[in-house]
Length: 456
Image 1 (cartoon, rainbow, N blue to C red):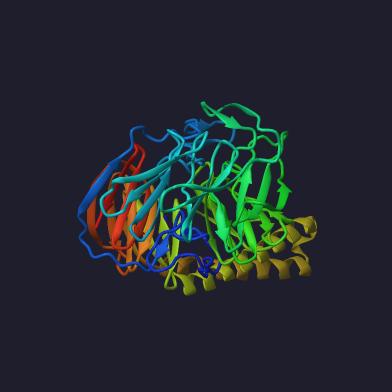
Image 2: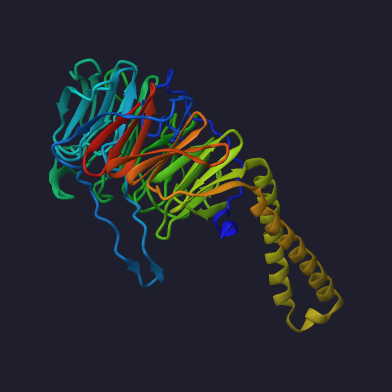
C-alpha cells in the first residue's frame, strides 16, 4: 500500500559536503552525503562504449542472509552487508578507478576506452571504492593500512599503518589484519577520516590523519561494534555504519562520540543535512534519525531514497515513486503530533479504569475521538502527495543525473524521467548491477560478475 510505504516524517535538505568539481564522480555515490545525485546531463539514448571484465569476480566479505528469522517471524530476510558486491568506481576527467576484493589491487582505467593504465597492490582485499582528492587517490584495505597514491601513475605517496603490532589472521576467507580498514575514506582538506578494526576486544577505532603525510590527528575507540560501510560526513559530523548494527556519530573536529542511533541496521546510508537515513533492516525498512536524536523519527519500506528539487524519489523492490516533499512533510508532522496525543490520551484513560465514565473520563474520550478523526483525515491526504508511481523492476541501485533517474537491476539498467516516471531508456548488462556512477557524459555500471560497462 502507498500509505505503508510512505511513512516518512522529516524535511530533507540535500547538503552534501563540497567535493565534486564539474561533472566528476570522485567518491562512492558522488559526495560524502552519498546523495547519488549529480548535475551531469547525458543525452539519451545511451550506447555501450566498452566493457572491462576483471579476471576475478568480486569476493564479498559476507554471504547473504539466512532465508528467515523464525524467532522474530521475519521471512525473506534482506541482505544488509552489500558494500562490496561489485567493484564500485569513481571517475574524474578521463580517469576511472576501482578497488578489487578479489586480487587486492586498485586499478586505473582510461574512461574513454576502458583500457588499464596502472594498478597498485595492497596486501589484502580493497573492498571500497577509492576517493579522489585532487591529483591523489586514497583508499583503505583489509591489511589495516590506508594508502595515498598519485593518480597519474599509482606511485605511493604515503602509507598509514596501524599503530599496533601488525597481527594477521584468517578472516572472511582471506588473511586480514586485526585492524582491517573496513570502511571508505573521507578526504576533506587537510584531514583523512577512516575506521579500522573488526574485533571489539582487540579495538575498533575511528581515525583522523593528516592528508599530507598520513600522520595522526586524532583516534577514538569505538563502541563494541565493528565499523563496516561507507563513511558519511556533514560539515561537523562523521557518520560510521557498523554493518548489521546501527550507525555511530562522531564530531569531526575532535573525534568525540556523539550518539548511537537506533533502528534498522545495515550498510546503506544517506545524509540530508545532518538527518540520517539508513538500513535496510531485516525486512527492508529504512530508518530516519534527526540530528541529536537516537530514536528513529520515522521508517518506511524501500531500498533507496534520492532527494532533489523538492521531491523524494522512493525506490522499492518493484516500484519507483515521486513524492511532493513540502506537502508530505507538513502532513507527516501533523500525523506524528496527533499520534503522540492519541497515545497519551489512551494511556490516561487506561489509568482511570472504572472512573473512565466520570466527567474527566468523558472529556478525554471526546478528545480522543476528535484526535482519531483528525488522524484519519491526515492519513487520507498522505497518499495524495504521490506525484507519480511506476513499476520499476530494477531494484538494486539508483542514481540521478540531471532530470533522469537511473536504476540498476539484474541483467539490466533503465532510465526514468524524473518529471513523470516514464521509462526513456534501458540496456542489458552482464550480471546484477549494484553499482552506478555518472561522470563527464558517461554512465558506468558495475556488476557482481566483475564487469564494468560504459555507456555514452
